[in-house]
Image 1 (spheres, rainbow, N blue to C red):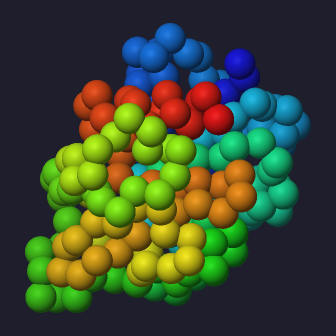
Image 2: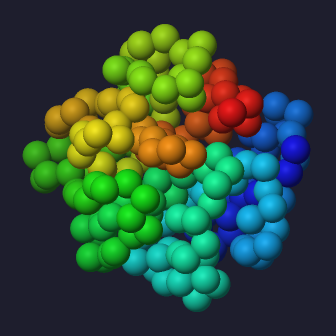
Image 3: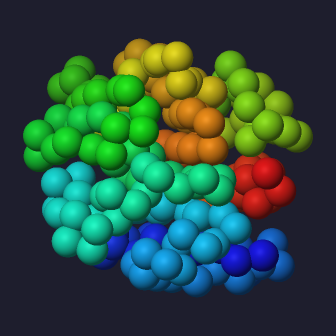
Length: 193
C-alpha cells in the first residue's frame, strides 16, 4: 500500500511516520503532486500556524490538488482545520472541503487545550473498535464547531467537532499518532478503508 504523507513544512510528520511503522506500514513524505495523486491513502498532518501553512500549500499547488483527491484522505490537527472553509487563525481561507469555519476558544479557558480529553458521539467506520468516551491527545487553540460533517465530539468549554467526514475526506483534531492504542486503532481503521 502506498501511503503519502503531505509535506508542506508543518511539524509532526516524524511521529506520524513512527506510528505507521509501529503498525507495519511505510509512508512516503512528499509534496509531489503525482506521488500524492497515485497514493492509496493520503495523510495530511500538521502542527503549526494556519496562514503560513496555507501559503506553503499554495506555493506547491497542493491547495488545488487536495480537494480533488479520490482516495481516503486523513487530516490531523492543523491538517483537519485547513480542510475547513476558513480559520480565525491568521484570518485564513482553507481548502473548503468541510463547510465549517474554525474559531478560537474564548479567554474563559486555558488555551491551548493541551492533554487528554474524551471523544464521544462516534459516527464513522473510522472509530470501529473504539468505545464512547475514550481519551485522545489534543493540542490546539482553535476548533471546528459542530456541523453536519461531525463524526466525533469533544467538550472543552463547549462541545465541538473532534472529527469530521465528507465522502473520502476525514479529519481528526486529536493526534492519533500520540493517542496510544486507541489512536493506533483509528490509524489502522483509516488504512483499511
